Image (cartoon, rainbow, N blue to C red; front, top):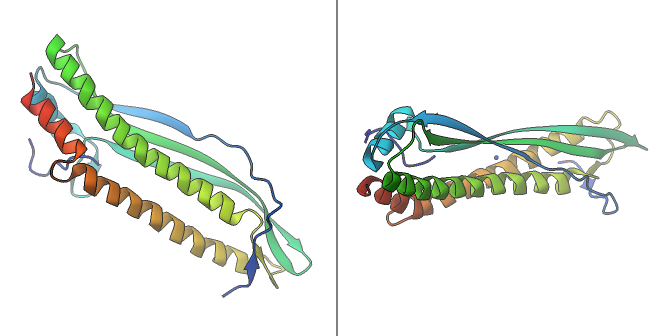
Length: 198
């Protein structure tokens, strides 16, 4: 086990137009595996510590990232500016370890339990990202700023709100990780079962 290895790894006047329908969209979710090796649970975990994705000052078991872009349309209505279209394109990437060779039967069973638990943990992060995007969509479609014929004030207002929603999502992720990776937490239990197993 490597010491640096961490166990695992968003004053204008405005109103919302309630009658605007939200667009249907689906997040694209993909898994990006990285290769590890070993013939025992302890060796596999050691390999994760050496090869896991670098996040901050250390390496992590798994990591969830996302790319979010918007198709957004601003329209001037009278002297006000209104967001009339706001469609997200969201790609979520889960980086997870993958054994590079066949494992002995008992180790393979132990590994499958471990990786299923880690993947489930990362999917929770993915769900909070999707919830964040839906919150942004609900907040912004129909957003109106008065006396903004150049649609400049609305961009400032939108950026401020996006920052608040993104910060809330990041805090949710930190809170979840604190519980999952704390003493007796789910991730700690998964690691112990893997390392102490066959």
